[in-house]
Length: 205
Image 1 (cartoon, one colour):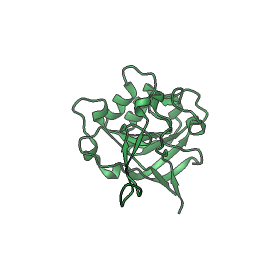
Image 2 (cartoon, helix red, strand yellow; image 1 turned 60 degrees about the vertical axis):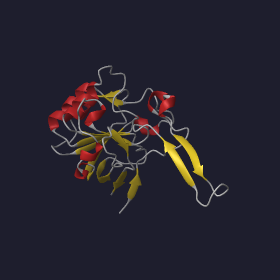
Image 3 (cartoon, helix red, strand yellow; image 1 turned 120 degrees about the vertical axis):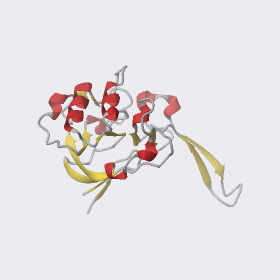
């Protein structure tokens, strides 16, 4: 058995969506051995920083939140597809030849996993690709980008997927991962009422 950690490391100067400063994590030392008997750190972080799961509430008013997520949707078999040949966006045409079945959890490995800086011009899932996945009735989709969409004013990709109750897993790092089938373990922190939550995502082979 091999276990692959496909999560981003949470650190002060990590890449964040579109490089927005407010999305950078802030660490604060609450207690140290020089000031007390324990070492404790406080973390302030946007829920969408690093590797995380989006819930419908993120973009759908009244949508479901993190505490309602069935764990069998994120601890599940998955299929990793190598789309490193895609230059800008993943469309329906890129997916038509892929063996996608109802109930699958799909993960896209793209050029993003090989970029040092991936805050702006990253490969994303375009609207037709999202529509195609909705038609296939998959359970979830993951991508090695800081967002599953980019430059979509109406957030069409998010709304299509979340409106179909498809789990969105963002911020993966897949450079050393080969195309194939794995067991995905991507349970988020169980935060009541949250529209998203951090994840330590693993692939098990």
